[in-house]
Amino acid sequence: MAAAASTVHACRRRRFVLPMLLLLLAVVRARVTALIVFGDSTVDAGNNNAVPTAVRSNFPPYGRDFPGGRATGRFSNGRVATDFYSEALGLGRAFVPASLDPDYGIRDFALGVCFASAGSGLDVATSRVFVSTPASINQTIEQSYLLTYTEFTVPKYTEYLVGLARAFLAELYGLGARRIGFTGLAAMGCLPLERARVARGGCDEGYNAAARAFNVALATMVADLGAELPGADIRVAEVYGFFEGVVREPGRHGFARADVGCCGTGTYEMGYPCGAWAAAPGGTCPDADRYVFWDAVHPTERASRLVAEHLINSTFGHFDN
Image 1 (cartoon, rainbow, N blue to C red):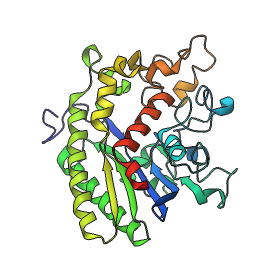
Image 2 (image 1 turned 120 degrees about the vertical axis):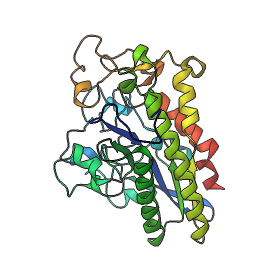
Image 3 (image 1 turned 45 degrees about the horizontal axis):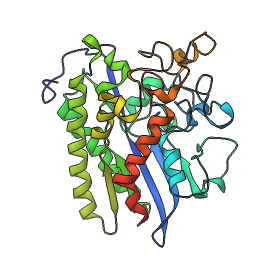
Image 4 (image 1 turned 180 degrees about the horizontal axis):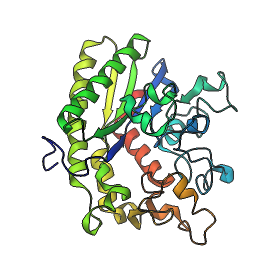
């Protein structure tokens, strides 16, 4: 990464999963009437509850601050960013239901639905890391950034994934989608999971450099593709700078900690390892609102709200004009 532009030699067998978010918006007379969500664990609303995978969060302490204290399968203490976005659009509910939730049907999805699934990716190799069956939803269209160091340099893998994203967008356009929103990648080298590996708990700047390079390539592709597709409104929201500002100066945003998560030690726990702390005295922090991260990877409800507000104010709010 210092040689982010050449080969990557450190931690050759590590896999780096970076989330992205993709939104489809149904629009009637310039008003957004439905929100369709694709993504990974940062916006999974509970689809993984119905998928044979080791990546789950439908148990305490997840969901402790969700209405009713229910662990829905969201990787958060409460709601995720797309829930807040749905609420801000005035769609009549404060969350987006998961497509595989048996409590909801096709009529419920008229206002929006979440197809996001934890561990998913454009590259089918992403899902195979976490899922036991190749036929799962994870293999389809949800997006993450997975660097397999033994096979790709960062530039080559970036090019490969951007090509997959372009093909997916073109397919969605062919199916009738016209308003599509992407997030770029955040400063993923600043996740507690990555900071725990770096001396003195600093961010992994190599990973951050890879994220920035991907964002540039994605934005260029989207601009080019949008110009080719009549009537398409495809937007990429800049989330890297905002997120980096929050984790590097948490106090300015009302947080006390950004270096560790609220659950357990806050350095490695996610999913079942986080759940193991549920019954332990002091197993989770008493006030998640003081933390940027809920576990070692995923933001708290409050951090997700701030991200949603940023996305709305900077980019996605303009879809409703």
